[in-house]
Every structure is written in structure tokens, then in C-alpha cells.
Image 1 (cartoon, rainbow, N blue to C red):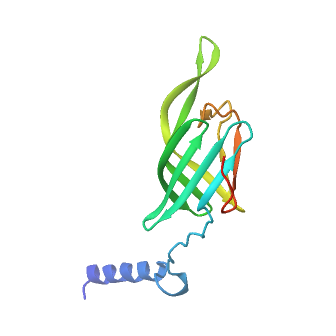
Image 2: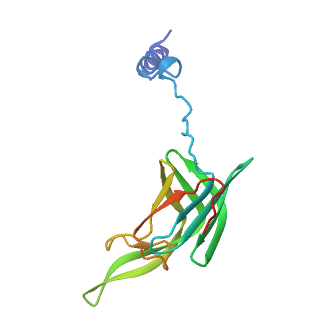
Length: 157
């Protein structure tokens, strides 16, 4: 064995010795997503009327969301402790100074509304703050919205 081969073998040995194991108790385990109780009707009526219906399908969840007179439909993506309703436009604004005056200028919208899920309630932030301003639903003036799950068989709004 020549010096080059010996150096190469030594380098491989050192790399293997200090590499993290890829088996046993340190192996990467698949991430589990906690089960969320999201199926059913969720409502909110303080300041504006919101009704969210979530249904389970064999390939995931779908939603129908009504905010006052606006209607949205689409897929639900389940995350760990939260859900995302695909396709809902969120108006984004950039903070700018125009002629010495602070102004929020509308930029390209983002899509997808995220809800935190906790104890059968779905919560989202409808409006941002002055430095990071956004609006989800213009006709709903509330900054924070929490939808409560209706009992099965109860009449919706």
C-alpha cells in the first residue's frame, strides 16, 4: 500500500468514526403529526359571521368557509398543531415613507390561512400590526378570531 492509498484510507476511517450513526436509537424517525379534531362545523359571530365546515375525504380534508357573504372552498393541509386552508388570499402591505408620511402600500397577496388548533377551537390572526400589516378578511374588523366547534346535530348560523 502506497502513501496515497494509506492517506485515503485514514481519511475515510476518520470520517466514518466521527459521522453520526444512521441506525439504532439515533436513527431519524418519521415525524408523527398529532391527530387534530377538526372535522365538523366551526363558527364565530363576534363582530362578523364566520362558518367553517371541514369534511374528511379519503385523500385528506376539504373545507367550505363563509365569511359574511364571501364563500371559499378548498383543501385543508394538516400540520403539527395547526391547519392551513389553501387558496384564501391574504392582503399584504409594505411599510413605506411617502413624502415623509408613513404609508402601508399593498403588495402581492399571499395565499393560505393558518389556524392554531387547541381544545376544539380554531384561531387565526385576521389583521397584522402597523409594521407588518396584513388583512385576511376586510369586512371583519377583529384582529384575533377564534372559532368554536359546534356540537353534532346543532343548527348552524
